[in-house]
Image (tube, rainbow, N blue to C red; front, side, top):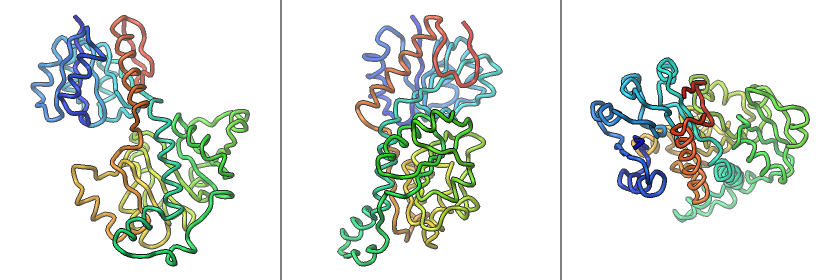
Amino acid sequence: MNKVVSFIPSWPVEVHREWFRNKSFPNLAVEVLPETCPLEEICEALNGADAILTAPGTFLSRDILEAAKDVKLVQFASAGFDSIDLKAATELGIPVANNPGWPSIPVAEHSVMSMLVLMKYAAYSHSELAKGNWVQMEIDKKVGEMPGKTVGILGLGSIGLEVAKRVRPFGVRILYNKRNRLSEAQERELGVEYASFDRLLKESDFLTVHVPLTGETNGLIGKEQIAKMKRGAFLVNTTRGPIVDEAAVAEALREGRLAGAAFDVPRYGDGDIPKLRSTFEGVKNLLVTPHTSSMSPESTDRCVKGFTANIFRALSGEKPQNIVNGVWKQ
């Protein structure tokens, strides 16, 4: 019987175990490990494992990968795959695959919602009204409209494409930046215009970030980049927290350089709420959500079906989809 070892930090172990044993892998041996599992126990569990299912959070070090002698695939449940020593996996001949696409619709919806909430000062108005403060006249000259604005999309992958589709009917100009530019025909069809990174920063009224976390994108938007942005612009980050320097954003908000910012995956998550609060203390037009932009019953179903099918591909000798390190061994 094939064996799958799974550790996904954000999913409770018991729920995780019940789901995979009864729904995803009923005919496989499944071992679910908690995030706090000691290295020795992880290595022991990997003895005889055919596949590893994981997500960002638990780092798969070289030591762990070396213990996975029989593993045919390391499958990430997520699109992100930064929590693995990818160089070690490649050197050891272990294929690593991610699971892109499944959260594109809800994350795109969340991104567009964030733009509107910020532009309308809705979160700020709500929080102030809850305190008994009537801020109508304070925000009267600040609230805006979408037509004629420029939306800059940093990273035009599956999520960025869905964002472009959703903002186009608002009558905005859409700039984008990505590693590989689209063809002219694709740009015309989508109604988007390519821009360099610097131009994207300078011309966007809304900058929405959709790049993966890599060595190149870690800290991609900091004080220097924010200083290049249009005064009064809005920044939306629904990708990984370390891509954007939140302290620099908070400073720009206090100074009035940025008019608002939204974070779905703050750098300081549930492990350090006090740090999160202190970073943004006194900031007015801010929307922070606890990594919920990808959540919906539909997206969860797509996620599970995606990684389940890919693991079965590997176990049956078929090449898995979405291999990120170029390794495949039958």
